[in-house]
Amino acid sequence: MVESAPDVIWDEIDVPEKWIQFVDDNVVASMSIPTPTRHANLEYLSPWSQLLDADSRDPDQAGRRVTQNDTGKGMLSGEFVSMTSLYNAVPDLAPVPIAWGTYALDQNVHFFLCSFVDMTDDIPDLELFPAKVAELHQKAISPNGKYGFPAPTYQGQIPQAVAWKDSWEEFFSALLKRILAIEETSQGPDAEMKQLTEALIKKVVPRLLRPLETGGRHIQPRLVHGNMWDGNTSTDIETNLPKIFDATCIYAHNEVELAPWRPLRHKIGKPYIKAYHRYFPISPPEEDHDDRLTLYCLRFNAVSSALYPGNLRFRRLVVEDMRNLVEKFPGGYEEWEK
Image (tube, rainbow, N blue to C red; front, side, top):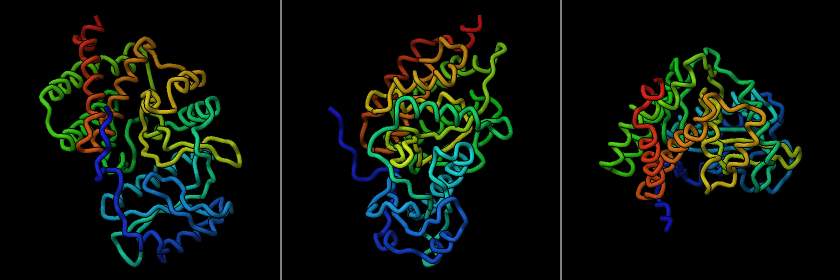
């Protein structure tokens, strides 16, 4: 049986209705920033960044998202930097980011503006979408050759570990440790999970990630959207091209982008992974590909668990994947290297 989500979840920040309906002077001022759209009108974006109340199909509209407090400010500033990075890399894949800022009338209320895109209610095309994602990963490479991101980004209300690291193993370990610690705070301690976490960090992560950058093998840190599941993707009705939004970017191993495409609960599934690799080959060692994606998906599910306190559905998925990986790789990298 699947538990229902609790009333309070970590990826939504309640904002009084008056601030959602009110167009602050700083929002109006931001609308004068030159962009490819004239953004004459506003549409409000929900906490999930889906366009609401789109009575008009005027292409000059813009989308507005409103949140509050320091966490909300960090979420929107990170989203703006993320969406700007994506747009600069592949302009037809993302809405045009216009601005983010703070209300003049209340310094605790913050906004994000982007161009309005009239989108379908369905997932993107099986061929077009993986091809555009692969194009993003091919074009957008870390400016300093390291893994990380130049600005704080959030998964829901959860801040990611984005400090620059030289190796993917080191960076992903920091990501994983951070989210597993937050998940424990959200759901409470669990003795088995603690033991599995130690083995995962000590044995599994080195076994699956170190071979990517040793033995003559090499990967490059590439820009990833960071949360590319069904709810953050769609199709532009006018152009029929895929669109992505609600980004939480990092420069990472490109295959980490595919983690949300692995769970059976999602509409964007394994056929999209197969299609993606027609445009971007599997990183060697190819035989580790499926287990790497399990590891990456484990982190994705841990984020979901942390976001829903009291709902243990995602924790059980995390523990199951932990058990399988720890049992499969008890000797870690050292045993594999022999």
